[in-house]
Amino acid sequence: SMPTGTPSRMPSSTPTGMPSSIPSNTPTGTPSRTPSGMPTGTPSGIPSSMPTGTPSRTPTGIPSTIPSNTPTDIPSSAPTAQPSFLPTVQPRCNCGIPTVQRESDLTDIFLNVSGITEFVFGTPQNTAKEWMINVDCGCYCPQDPKSQQRYTLAVFYYSTDGPNWNECSAALNCSDPVAVANANANCGRSRVLVDPFNVPTFFGTEAWLSPGSECLWGGVECRSDSLCVDRLEFDNNGLLGTIPTELQALTEMRYVLLERDNLVGTIPTELGVLPLTVLDLNGNSVTGTIPTEIFVFGSIPGTFAGLLQLDLDTNQLIGTIPTVVGVPLFLQFIQVQGNQLTGTIPTEVGNLAFINTAEFFLNQFTGTVPEELCPLRTDVVSVTPPFLTKLTADCNPVLISSPNFVNCSCCSDCPLTLT
Image (cartoon, rainbow, N blue to C red; front, side, top):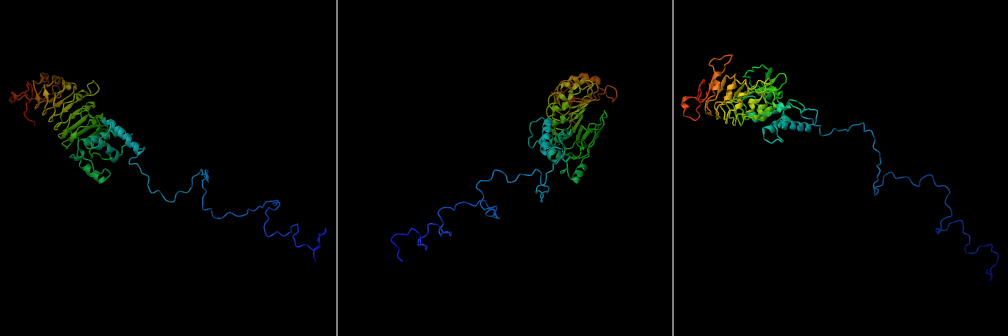
C-alpha cells in the first residue's frame, strides 16, 4: 500500500527496508575503525611461538662485553692427543744452570785469566774459550775451580800450534773413543828432570784436550794433593808460537821446560809470579830481554827456595844480565850462551855460592868475568863447596882483537862454537 503522508507514531510490525539503529550480533564484513571494548582478563601461560632450532645467521652488531663462560679453575685432566713436534733441548753440559748463563759465566772467568776485556776472533784465547764452551767433552762448569787451569792449558795449546805438535796433539773428535785412543797412542811424553824436593806428583801421558782431567795430558805434571799443574815439559815436540802470559794463572807451577822447539816472542814477565824452580827455554828463537821478575820471586827467606836452574841458551836474547841474578841464593845453573847479550857480566853472580854451571860465551859481552866467581871454581865434582865446575866466556885468545873478547882468569873453557 501507499504510505501515509504523515508517519505513524508507532512502528509497524514489519521492519522497513532501512537498517535498524541497533547493530546486529553478526559483525559486518568490514572491520570496525575502533578496537573492541576490553582485553581478556588473564594472559596466556604459553608463549605465542617456540624458538627456532637453528640460530640466526646474522650476528648482533656489537659483541657482548662479558664472556659467555667463566674459565674453570682446574685444568683439564686429559692431555693433548698428539705430542708437540719440537722436543725439549737438553743442555750440552749439565751444570745446573741455563746454557746461556754457563757461557756467560765461563766467558767472564776466561776474560779475567787473560786480562782482556773482550775476545778477538782467531786468537788462541778466543779459540780456547770456544773449545771450552762448545766442544770440550770434559764439560767444565763455571763453579768448577779447575776451569781456569783447563782454559790456561788450552790457551798454551793453541798459542804453540798444538794441532801440529809432533806428539800429543788432540783427537779430531773427543767423543769418538777410537779417535781418542789413537791420539793417546801418539803421546809418549815422559819426565826428564827429577825434582830434588820430591813433591808428590803424577805425570800425564794422554793426548791434549782429551775428555779426562788436564793433569793427564802428556807433558803436564800435577801435584797429587791439589791437582794443580806443577810442570810443563816438552823437548823437540814442534811447538811453534809464543809463550802465553796466561801461564801466570798456574800459580803452583815450578817447572817450565820448553826446549829445542820453535818458540818466538819474549819471555813473559808474568812468569815472575810463579814459584819457578826451573826455567828452561834453550834452543828456541826467543827475543827481547831477560826479565828481572824471574829472579825475584822467593827472595824473602823461608818462603821458597827460589830459582835453581835458568837455561836460556841458543836464542836471540838482547840486553844485559839483570843484576838481580844474585838474588836467588840457591841458583845452581845458568846458561845464556849463544845469544846477543851485551854489557858486562854482573859481579852479583859471585853471590851464587851453590853455582855449578855458568856459561856466557858466544854473546857480545865486554870486560872481565867477575873475579868473585873464581873462589867458587873447582875441577872436581863434589857434594861440598866449591861446586863451580863449568865456567865459560868469550875468552879464547883468537878473539883477543875482537870487541867482544872477555878476560877470564879462571874459566874452565873458552868455546868458539856451540856444541
